[in-house]
Length: 475
Image (cartoon, rainbow, N blue to C red; front, side, top):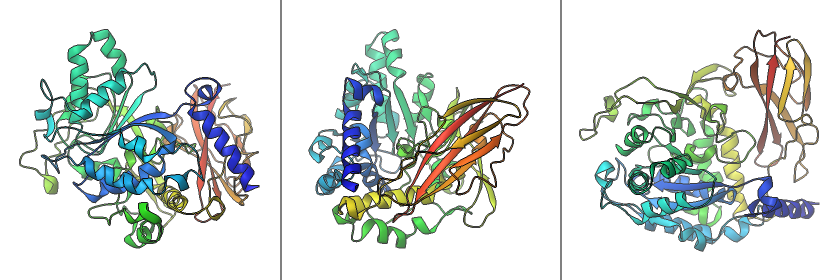
């Protein structure tokens, strides 16, 4: 039976990778370019290893070594290549579990570097690099899919590419290219991020502005916020589940210095798990939730993070995707916490278990490993009902590729919808795949987001999701 499930997975994954024809109509892979100040901190190497265990889900178009506030005069593409050497030893085993993992040789061809120059000093006439040229060429391809630039250091190599496009192309053509750009930067690690936001007001940009990391959403990945699952980001958990006895890729995962994988939130919402929609950061997902607004100015060059050479912060000039607050009842202490970091740490146990499972995939057979369940929705993911009307949320047809028993949980995600009131799905929500819900009374149309979480009982237990958006109309 497992062989049949594996064959079906391989066929579906193959169809999804086809550039034309039926498979291309089913789904298209997301295009991704990574900009990393690898070697400034071990966390870039950690994030790169996690990234590679999911890279079959994306078209990886570039892995670019760049500078940052933490590493101003050095770029280290050789360190990316070193991680790819470890990936090369496990890529064939990963293919036993899911199709689409590119060869290390193919990824090595995408490794480039920006200038070993900090910030806007590396932007303008005469500052092209192999990294910026890769970006220009990728954006100019006759491919309408957006490109996600996940920026783990400073974005000045991307800024140079955008400067060149702006300087060498007619405005109308350049604007079409800007519409393909999606940027997520891990705070502002040089002054080119603010420049991009001001110079290209139409570009999609996710960031907690400024250098002061204490306000950043991405801290929810691993820092010990009250209510968060601290055990799954501990040194002991990482040694047991990622580093030790997990083959060459696990052995390449360094010990944590400041915080585990601070850059990983930049791509967590790009993972296909049924929860997030990359084009809608306000929906929320493993990588956090973000809202589109003009944030008030806050001077980030203060306190413990003060830098003598940090340029003076400037107010934002247009709305961006930035910090949003979720109220989350912690599974650890059952207390409700509200913060922007909670938009990430609420999923921490799930995404850590998922990573642990993929690390097992690097060395073990299909039969020895766990694989995520496949949720189904009996009534689709968009419903329209009237005030006071009862409707059903049903996960009928949900399966697990390993034949594992599964647990079901339905819950409302109030911050993601326009209706902020509470809609009860209890006591039916826990462990029932089909639950009745009564629509609230409303005076104007509202949306309510319901999340189905299906967790199998494999080792480690893996979760997948479906989101149902219900539009409630007044009678």
